[in-house]
Amino acid sequence: MGRRRERERDGGGVVERVDGGVAELVGDRERPRGWTLLIDGAPQSHVDLDDPSHLSFEYQRRLGHVIDLTAPPGRPLHVVHLGGGAFTLARYVAATRFRSTQQIVEVDAALVQLVRNRLPLDPGARIRVRAADARAGLAKVPDGWADLVIADVFSGARTPAHLTSTEFLTEVRRALRPGAYYAANLADGPPLTHLRAQIATAAAVFPELALAADPTVLRGRRFGNAVLLASDSELPVAELTRRVAGDPFAGRVEHGRALADFTGGAAPVTDASAKDSPVPPAAVFKS
Image (cartoon, rainbow, N blue to C red; front, side, top):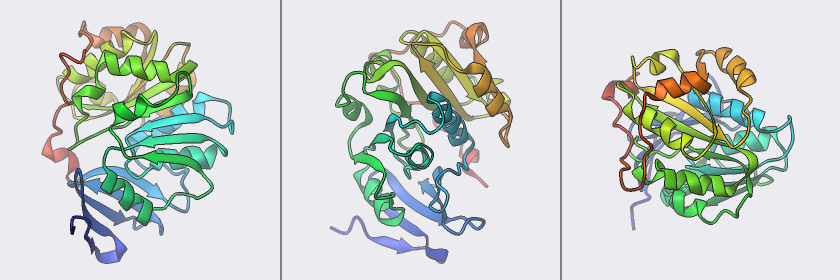
């Protein structure tokens, strides 16, 4: 039908129209088989096919710390990825936790096909990819199946409203085994209304929370990503704090009373009140 025609970029990259916009795969000058995926110019994922344990993006490194701390090193996990991108975090799990079983739910079927074709998964990895809406895909996960659910879902650089509510997080908790973790990539900027509301929403469903982000984002000085971690049991806050502080772009972890104070009395979001996350400023994606 013509929709999936590809245009080669210099250096072997690709520009292709997918369901969610224009996807680009741009080669990494420092890594021979490294690629960055952009959608409508917004960087979405980075993959190194030679070293899938390499996490380039700041927020993905923080999600990598969560993966590392979900269970003792090397222990296989059951992981659900809501949002696929270039399958970066699923590749990371497969590389660091052999014999893990994973499900990726990505609504953009054309993007899934592009990534499968151009950045193929290890055929030995136990990774199932389903082209479906994240919430609909999550509903198919058996009760208590997952050790970890990761939400990294953006459409037009915004998280869809139906993935921001207490009803959605109640469904996440249903899919988690006792003691398991939920981690979400959240994006917001001044005055942090969305981020505060998302913390309040998670607190209405999970008793234990932590938030990792750049200090300038937490102070409301710029737009950026924050990683929310939630569970029904105690979180590895001390070790997460140490790892986040040691990143190339050092971050900070908030939890307990400090995180509750940060929320500032924000009300939990329900399906009836949910909105898409804020539109990022154009300057965020300028090099």
